[in-house]
Amino acid sequence: MPITVRLCFILLWVALNSKAAVVLEYHHISDKTPKSTSISVDKFTAQMDYLANNHFKIVSVIELAEKLRNDETLPDKTIAISFDDSYATVYQAAYPLLKKRGWPFTFFINAAAVSTSSLFVSWDQLREMSRNGVTIANHTMYHNHVPRLKDGETRSQWRERTKTEIEKAQKTIAKEIGNVPKIFAYPFGEYDVEVQKLLKELDFIAFGQQSGPLGSQADLQSVPRFPFGGSFTELDDFIMKVNTLPMPISRIQFFADKHHEINNLIVKQGEQPYLVLSISNNNLLDKIHCFATGQGAINSEIIAGKLWVQAKQPLPQGRTRYNCTAASSEKGRFYWYTQQWLATDKTGIWNYND
Ligand SMILES: [Zn+2]
Image 1 (cartoon, rainbow, N blue to C red):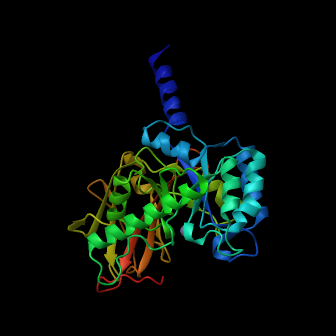
Image 2 (image 1 turned 90 degrees about the vertical axis):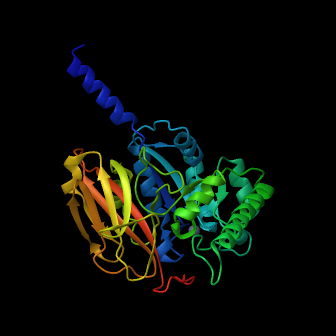
Image 3 (image 1 turned 45 degrees about the horizontal axis):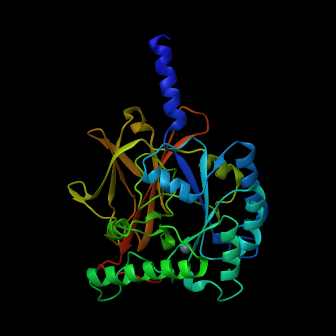
């Protein structure tokens, strides 16, 4: 076989077997629940029909996590499905539909909410789902803002409190369901470097709520998921997202300003941190467009071969995400990377109410 043909086969193999997958995240499946966290049964059904008709392979979050842990390749068009927050509509609407298709899914539950009202599932319903292949997993006990320190709390007190709550949720699910895997979803998708360290020590793979596909550089304590609900329920948007490719990033850095690198995702209200991306495919550098939550398109410039991305307005308290995308050479497929930031108030105090 001529060497160029052989090379083409190798490149094709790499493209088809690259470690890329998309995790879907839903809350309510209903048109009677709050719009911002809901998708209607009809729209959810249309999304699942699209996956079936276009030969996507649905794997469990556990299978995906194990492959990531072992650094194995994942075929293109691999999808995992997840739901957060213990809502009853997952049992009522999504479970029968996915069971009929024989598709696995994961339900991340805030354990203290289970069986407390008709809004939430019951332990009996969770046991029934678990017997039928659904994975029930940890989303804390009380759905707290995990990275945020309480007033007057030291870092070591925060660590103890957080570790205790995660372990309590794990034990509660194990007692009720019989088994519980070591996977975790951050409430509100909020994480920072300290939380990632803690979850790594506890041997959890942890999922965020920042959009994007998983690439070979995926950090196992901040695995991205595409959330669907609110203004993101249309089929066109879904099709674009499930076909995304991981941005070929070789290094991610954070800077408070042009001269000060920081090793954290936490800033103060009013700051405008830089996300600095080194891209392994230099041809892409000037094709990347970035956006920030509530700010639309934001500035990016290429300095010494790296992309420097900065919000154009000061960050408000709470969560802000920088989304960066670029068209790929495959029609309709975009490279995608999202970075989440967290901002305290101007004095460094956390707000627990947003
Ligand atoms: Zn949640």
